[in-house]
Figure (tube, rainbow, N blue to C red):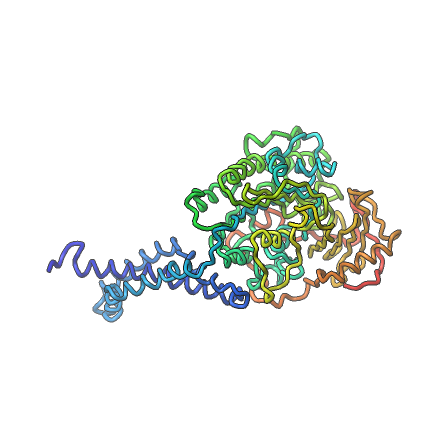
Length: 594
């Protein structure tokens, strides 16, 4: 028998140990991660046990496989060099490189690849789903919403979103959609969980209620357990693994530098040709391009902005403005509006054609496009988002599109709907139920409205922001929007209870006149309806939930990424100070309690 060359016993020993190490790096680590997710996600309780195998199978771990190869070679060579001192460890490595241990290691690593398809439900006749979140887009910045409502932030821009408009005309457009929160984390968590922020508890920038709870059942978990492949791509630092938003996604990619072009290219790579797909997929894209700072790349940069302003709106300047350490001119505000419109036009020109292509190529595809919140451009004396519950932050575009096999007729819906209605709508489309063991959904399916049935729905919203010195330090706010009226009140559990706004939206869509003192009875009835709805929760209480904890130090550059986008420290100032443009609250005591 030959004793040298690449087929020698020594070389085969190290080669076998490398294979064993790679198998363990993939199989054992993937197994432990899937086991942790199974426990924390309460998958067995919800009937989602197959997600254990799907998660294990998807966690191949390319990076750690490369690391395992390097470590195995180094370890084998080091122990061989000093085997006179560490003879037993080297003998163990040689043993693990023999055929039987290697075969067992490979079998363990490949086990989920064989089990997952066996347990997977057959969803081949179900639609694939693309859900796109266009971060920071106001309803009145989208063409089809402007035409439906007669209200436009920039009426001089005649056609701000031609591609989305064309797609809306072919599907279902909801011109009166309301977000349940005015900033990204709680709004997106509501979209993916179907419950109000006070229940999912991902409501704070930093504190006990920061994470998306691991035991909160989500849309990707529901679809993954039913046979869909689930893929998530996010460019917003709030929507990332660190805060728990990866749960349920078999593939999840995150990066604050991802542009919409980058995200769509990644999506194409993950999805591959439609003809080669054996099962439906759920693709979630969270595109952060329209979030400040507004710096659209060519040829979109300069498309609309005709000002000479060079002002920059980012996390630092937003806080400086709110604390009156900086001021912006009217030209600066116009500059912000126009450059924001350029970012939205970029999204329209990139996302729109990509969706048109997907709908043309796939016979059974459902698409949802919406935003998580809007943006204030001095509408009420302030800038940014998260600080109030005014409509410039809560009214968002929402549209559904579908390929021919879905079989629905195009429709324009003016009835009030909520972001929390999206999840039950998708379940309804797919014929899926929600387990009774999971937290009950707060939203309702939109399918009846697509068929010309159903009524306007009351819309709750909330924020745990302390407010802004420019528009009023209020503490946490709760609102209830229904039947043409909107009630807003500072939470009773906050530092400034009893601060109330009441707007008659039909006659005052810009929310300029606070009628709380003139219409105390109506304000009280709306507050009572909110209390009786079961949607009002004290999310300031310590989060007694697994997976929630105070985040004193963020990983890597996350703190800087969040601060740059305005998610750092809140602005501070006097509680009763108002600047021009803000609407003063009314200090009244309403009968119903939180």
